[in-house]
Length: 216
Image 1 (cartoon, helix red, strand yellow):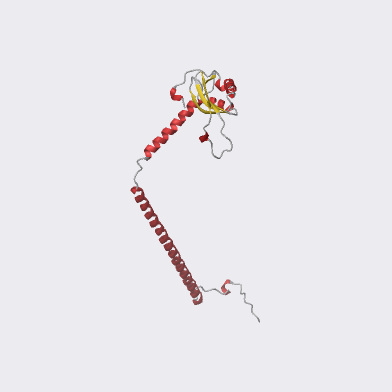
Image 2 (cartoon, rainbow, N blue to C red):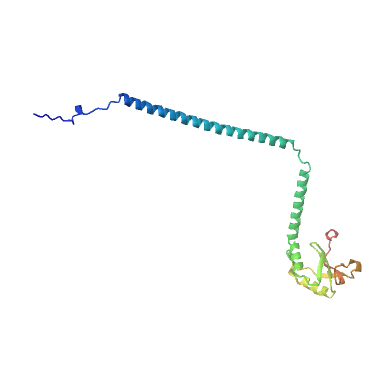
């Protein structure tokens, strides 16, 4: 008579022995390998950090030396005693230019005509061929201009144009002085193929008193 054995019973199943020598040996070997790997990694990391720390320390020492050298160089420099005077002179020049620009752009007190800047624009608008200015003097009460003409006949036309310009409203120009000039032969440029032409110098002034210090 045959007998059947049920191998599915828990009591009859094969059991794994964790304390067996092969298993314990494998676990120990794996642990040793892991410890060796960790030790090597820590040694590598320590060496890298040491290298970076040494490089950083060298850079810091170099920067400290540069700062010290710069401080000694700055301390050895002597202050420029002329610099404050130069700055003061420049500021004074800027302030004078600002006052001049304000004065030139200021309109007349009665508001009947533009300021000096308007007069300069008027001279520019009424330019004529054969007429050029060589100087002028501006004052609230009077204006004086000096110039030259290639033909004296041009002067009345030039005066009429100035008197009609809105920039000189309330002022009337009239001729005070005219003088013919014949350029000297020695003043003639050597490279010029044509002789210098004679010209006429003139002075025009509006009605009113012109201070002497304004003449230029």
